[in-house]
Image (cartoon, rainbow, N blue to C red; front, side, top):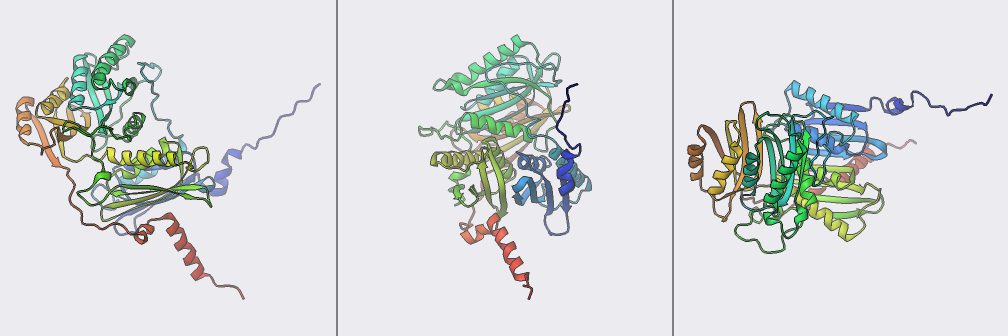
Length: 484
């Protein structure tokens, strides 16, 4: 009888890291060390994209990351975040603290990107094996004043109920993700013929200004479950998709021709002449360790770290070390990165592309002007009517977040006058007359003048990972007593 031999595998091999390091993920939340912030420490087995997942968890919980240190060499991930709640205070709600522990623990056990929806270019696809509540339609194209209003009107005419929608405009590019259902049945749209009809009509709307480069337009109807929106009506997973869509249409390339008065773009902080500060992105080489050091300096704002880490991750770069911090409203970030293939950024063209993409990621969410928040009883065609009134009053939507909460429809728009003038508040009264019972709140998002002086190299080094490592070595040397 022929003898058969099989290789031996230790049944406890998959537990080997846990036996060495302890649990594969340890989350420590310290509320005693700092007076104004809560310290969240994460020690975990490393995997590609884990940093983005952790930042996304904290962002989803509406927490602000004021400072952070990241190290992920040798297959082990060590991370420290200083976080505050939306009011700038340390975390005192025990339920929120428990949610952080649970969410980070769940993140460390799942694979990055597993929750991202499958997308299709220029194709309408229905996947009945995945239960869903709505159909997601993704759109990109060349932006123009009133385009978001035309999209809303087209969907209303196609008998689509817009349950949720998010749109970004930047550098004459538009990215939009809309969740729709059938107007009569309030169910996902499954008929391939109807999906093709929706794609055809929306493509015609988008291509009205895209003759120069029609390939910039694509629509992806994909059935997908819509999760509960966050505090401001947005969801971080949708925001990551918007970043990807904007990147796909190269919004980091600025328009070649001079802007006309009717051109609407998301005003970025790299043109912050009013505040006296600019967005500065630079890349240096660290030949000893084979890293490329990416430094970012810009005006601080919520979700900034998510935007930069998201862009680096989607561009297939791995963050090995990082330090982030802010001081008097100005943020400094430093990332030690390599490409997914293990190499640093070697060519000037690659460095230039990373710089431009990071600048665009920072600018996309910076929308100066007027933020209009309104709430009204939900009905079919409400978004189309609201955006029509905005367009008739000469206002362009730079960013939009629309969500349905029970019987209410909650909208947030960032608006700018298409002629470049100050926004006339008279449109609010005309909107109330046309819309009927509606709650409206207007906020001015214009940047306040800053007198802050440029950051010196010594000040920047306080937030540097290299400075942190150096301080630990110096402290060790001072406490070291040689044995005689």
